[in-house]
Length: 146
Image 1 (cartoon, rainbow, N blue to C red):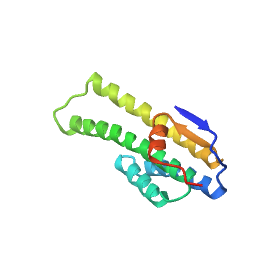
Image 2 (tube, rainbow, N blue to C red):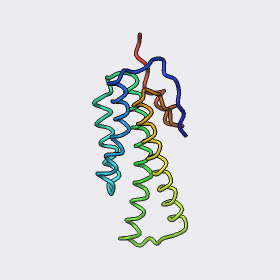
Image 3 (cartoon, helix red, strand yellow):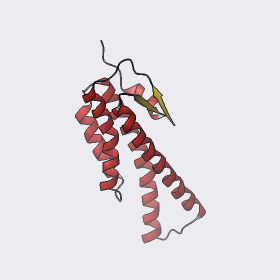
């Protein structure tokens, strides 16, 4: 799921910290807004907009985190809505619901672990690429012209 790659250059201390903070922002937002899945995306989006004109290393990692938070939001909103329809509507707990909720738990857990790992590695100045999100990030985020 995660791949470390060599970047063309070694980011300075400040940029490595900002890139690492883009990952940590989603973790902090998770702790604050756990029952509301949109809180993570809003916090990550604000950090992305604050750094979108920064160094390429920082922009790239802010963009990758943004893509991951969008996917987490989609899965969590579906699970949250389904749960609410069971609690307050006429839907019942089924095997499909249980399977989906287990999938969401595993997805969120793996995303949390990957986020912590990526925050640590980017703080060291290493470039970390996540499966699927790195390819999307490369399409959207272009390097600075030297």
